Amino acid sequence: MQLFDTYVQKLKYKVLREVSRHAYEGTLQDCYLDIPKLISPGPKSELRCCIYKERAIVAERVKIAMGGNKEKPNVIEVIDIACDECPVSGYRVGPDCRGCIAHRCASVCPRGAITFDANHHATIDPDKCINCGKCASVCPYSAIQNHVRPCERACKVKAITQGENHVAHIDDSKCIACGACVYQCPFGAIQDKSFLLDAIRLIRESENNQKYRVYAVVAPSISSQFVHVKVGQVITALKHLGFFTVIEAALGADMVAYKEAQELAEKGFLTSSCCPAFVSYIEKSFPSIREHVSHNLSPMAEMGRYIKQTDPTAKVVFIGPCTAKKGEAQRECVKEHVDCALTFEEVQAWIDSRDLDLQTLEVGVLDNASYFGRIFARSGGLSDSVAQALKEQKIDFIVNPVVCDGIEECRVALLKKQKNLLKENFVEGMACTGGCIGGAGCLTHGPKDKSEVDKYGHEAYEKTIADALALWQQK
Image (tube, rainbow, N blue to C red):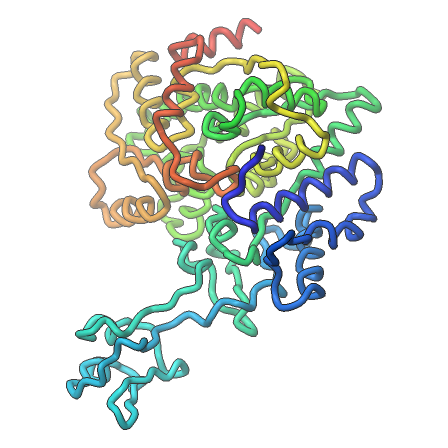
């Protein structure tokens, strides 16, 4: 039985599942007829002010599940009609204000935004306030608090602001498509576009004309997903969906580790290129460091390239925890290698739409990468793999990495590099806390146990990167 962190996530899953079901039945035009069924709240109502508004919002969810606005390149979209419940962000005076006569808050306010009533209780004029926070820092009762919308708080690159009518607005010039806002919005007003219909179309066409085969490339973070079943049962389910075979993106990670080690030794300093959100962050916020980004493809794209070199007619679908991978798959240097990217959330909905019971399926085998390829899924895994690749290739270079666990740590490291204060020679950047296992497209979003990733890595038959690469070269 699939568990969900929130009702919002459950609703998202239900929409994806029904869109998938209609795609197979050839009745996509009838998806909107399912809206009353999708929002049935059960014995305890979880709806908004009225059923009609809720239906309108779910209709927008259906559109995004079917691919969203094709004219907008960003894979993250705001459902305007759903974004109207959060209070306006800003500093406010709470009930703890004691009406003191010191008036320190007003004294430090640079815009004269604070006034007092007859009882000396402070009030902040939002039209004058510039959110500098000086008043909050001097209040002896901590009565002044900064109220920040969940989406704004979740966005560490400050790409979300309040637009017209106080609806969340995403600045595409800053957004890195990490998806943090998607999960943190308590009303589900921010969603990631789904390319599930594209994947289903590829599968259906391959079954009908048999001119090509569809390969599933699965991220190593699968080890932290589908915890109610074995990974091998998920692999069997994917083959039941119509995939010709399932291959680990971890093998692409092995390939990347070897190449990245060589590039690092040659250049002396490098930032990783595996996390598309991190790469986007550098491109948009630290353009002067862009020249130091590794020129290697990500494991997803590297694996896709390898598959299509081996089978020129192949189609490749990536499956992982990352919303930013959806954007990466559309980049010019990647789209020839990967046809579309899905999240684990979407794959669970797809499997359930076909009435496949994971727990009753036989345990399949996932083509093996090395231990080092598999630990790319956690923070620090890439650095460990690069060090191993240097050792295996007998390259005389010592990697001194700074492991950035989350985009805030990435920012600190990049600022140091920008100011020539960074002592390390390799920046491993992961936008999500914990690494890929903390991605926005995960089935659950609680704290992940990194040791589970290592355990999964130790299950690999190939213990070195060289062993994994040699095995696949033989194939």
